[in-house]
Image (cartoon, rainbow, N blue to C red; front, side, top):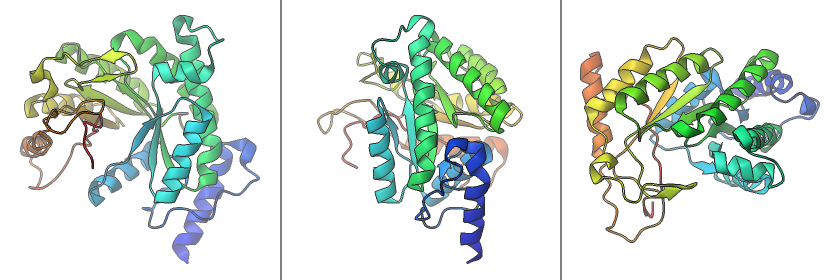
Length: 305
């Protein structure tokens, strides 16, 4: 049918740009059914990233994100996504990326962490189209002291963009939740201005995700910091929305934590997110029921669903 021909054309058109070595090999024809127009199998960036995130929001589902530390874990994620007919976010933390590069590589000035993340990105790009699924290629928590790692990855994005017309990664996360809100917004705005020039998305964190992940321990965080306020979310949204061509998501806190916990030990309050959507709609004069913010949920929080 016409839609199938359009999808096949899109796959052929993007093959050379995305991963030239495999341009002569056809991507899997068994691609996901009912993908929105503008989405083809492979790593999605720029406008395609926006379309995919908006589609998930409209359909009412979250796209799962998995931190990967090896080619095996990447392949397992791609296979699982294919079996579940689901898009997926494959991401790297600085520690996971360093592990990916191998113990023999020096990590002075985040050399190994940068090299490992870039190597992982190329692995994902080589296989995502072959599995026939759309993949968001992302990097996870990046605190203030880890920003040199992000700087190295953005340089890789810029080089890739010059050659292929799109960034190497779909998006990156900056986690300045432990810094004052004003500094968090200022630095995120500065980075988004750089990222927007090559169509890279930004995920920023507001409020602290409890628990422990990748050596960052927030198990003793102030309980109040585990819950974001609608006014704070609006401050972030207002500032980042002013960046031309800026594409961003907000990891707001609603009591969510990293790790596995006994039932009753974690108190989730997702209504915070709904209240924030309503608050921002009123500020922007949008129709009731609109959802202008793209939210990110961190941590399993001990939830069984």
